[in-house]
Figure 1 (cartoon, rainbow, N blue to C red):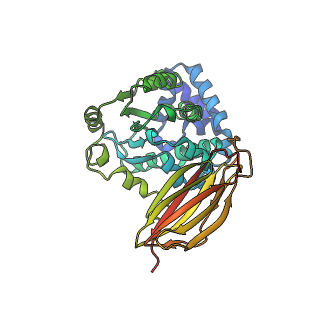
Figure 2 (cartoon, one colour):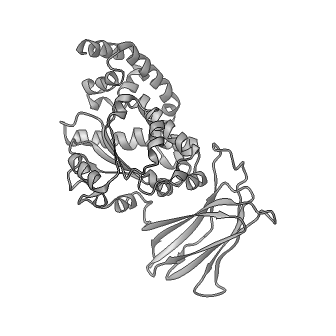
Figure 3 (cartoon, rainbow, N blue to C red):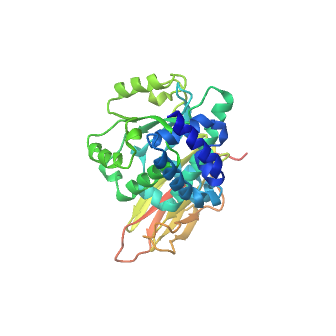
Length: 383
């Protein structure tokens, strides 16, 4: 194995350039021995297979690399990442006992319809590159600087399936998982120390067999599936100190909702997203607190569209917004075409109030059901 490592090191130095950058995905601060070994382990120290893997990864990184791996997450997604995270909650929270970052993903709360309203498949892939090369990489480097003994650039992952239903496992959802898995397996080998899949429903067994086929066997061997809360809490405490583990996962650190809120745009105190399936009319009432003010936006791929209004339910006849058409001018089924985003409010609505948001379909007598994501951003009330 040592001979293969020396041979691989010499080849990396000889080729240099993007080949070397691929191997040192997170920079040379990782350390030569650890970076090289990640790639060697991924291909069981078979030298020719390792070289082929790095060549394929270098090609895969080529286009994202030209874009600087999308340093601006808003530009990558085409939407504020906080809206995206509301549709698919995921976050970093503290570190495991090994010093590796703790990553928590909640696909059980994934809203596929909501995702379709706000971004594209390409946007999701661009954002994944951003997360790996900027967010995740920066966390690894920060851990290394804080603790020089931290050598393995890996993370501990918790995949929470609470709330997952069979309807969540759509072709689109699986395509996203497969593409992200392919990128990680090829370009970031051996960067997962351990994954614990929790709150596993019975029907997931068939899906897991499918997903497992996309994963390198060595990586699949690091994944544990645990259904019962008592069992998975105990396992998480074996991996993560209690003061680093979120309180909603059996620890004493801040809960994940609090951590996620820290990623909200500056000044925002909360956000509400509401997915609507509109065939003729639809409305919903939202409370604005006495110390809050709110702005309202709508995201959609609806090509027939709807006309939106916002009124004060507490004061009949008081209308904030009236007759705003929200129509997607592109093709509803083109997953690579950006959705339409319309900000309904030109000024923030101050509380206390109960605002009634209403949509009237524009599709006529033969109404078809179309999907809209209504987003309310709440801020402290201006003095």
